[in-house]
Amino acid sequence: MPAAAPTLDFERELAGQGYALVAGCDEVGRGALAGPVSVGLVVVAAGQELLAGVKDSKLLREPARQALVPVIRDWAVASAVGHASAAEIDAVGLVAALRRAGVRALDAVAAEVLPGVVILDGNQDWLSVPVQPELMFGGAAGGADVPVRTRIKADLTCLSVAAASVLAKVERDSILAGLAVSHPEFGWDVNKGYATAAHRAAIAAHGATEFHRRTWRLTAG
Image (cartoon, rainbow, N blue to C red; front, side, top):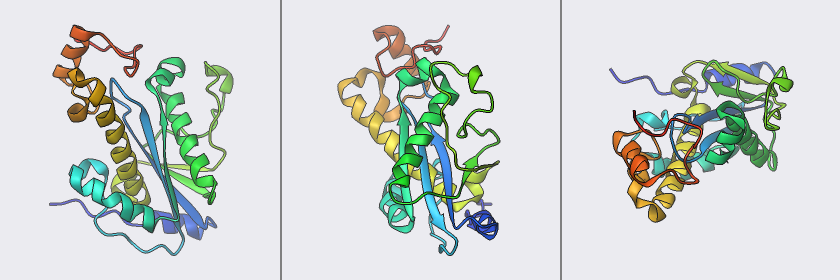
């Protein structure tokens, strides 16, 4: 039985708590060996209408995701995607790099509007300023100063988060496809930087590039 389409029920619940603008936020690229981590952000208003056809990006085929991008951008009050590079992931760690990418997305939408609250997929708030910034390293303690509400499976149930996942996925996939032109041996246009057997074998054969996360275990064995 197909999963129910995401709704704006939680966004409207937050609007009822006084947040006129609510942002959905989701990341892609967390588990990849190469390429950035990318964070999508989609801002909706209290009275926003539903948008048909949008699901978590993993449930959509590539042509459908690409076709939805202009539709989502027209529908949203504001939207953006932020990125943090493989070098940044190596320098400050994955969670801090996610935070940087998320803050970049927030900064981009803040040029138009500032959401009152952010819905973050999952149960880990990697977007907010750390409670104990002295535990961070590499100058990575900065974070969002907008209230964050984590929600498990928000990418499946919250329309703003599902829309954010589509924007982030399409933009990150495009980056990897572009990098594949000059590095065809790694198959990034197909594997999008993830840890396939062929990707690991190519790293073993050709060595890591500046776009690989060099602090990670890149090859098998």
